[in-house]
Image (cartoon, rainbow, N blue to C red; front, top):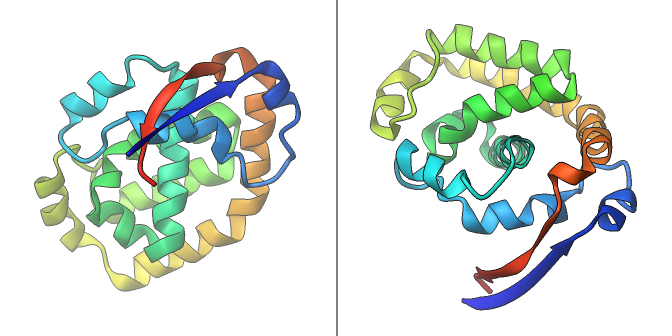
Length: 171
């Protein structure tokens, strides 16, 4: 591990291009928030961040997992612990399409997913490949357009995304 100093200023945010790539704003949470254990630890490691930063991180994790292996991978991996924050993030950015997509996921899932990973493994058995593939493809079609809304939201709430500090990161 090595140390990295990160300084996210209003200028950093103003200079963001309207693209899907605004990882630099989510990077502090990416390195500090623990999604790999239980919900209590997830909550504890989020305390240093704003609700907006929390939502941004969740939307990034969902995007990363779905683009790597679809919604099945998202729900199967530890990243699913962020599902509700991603859902609330889509509401916060005003993405009716992604909120609707998450509603479909919950419907196919059969209930609101558990925050406990082992419980989710049992729950995911309700998911069929057909349902998951259809929703994953819908997400891919919407993603670029909807991520533009994320950047606009970040710019409109820049004071909520400021960060200055040194983090330990993996090389």
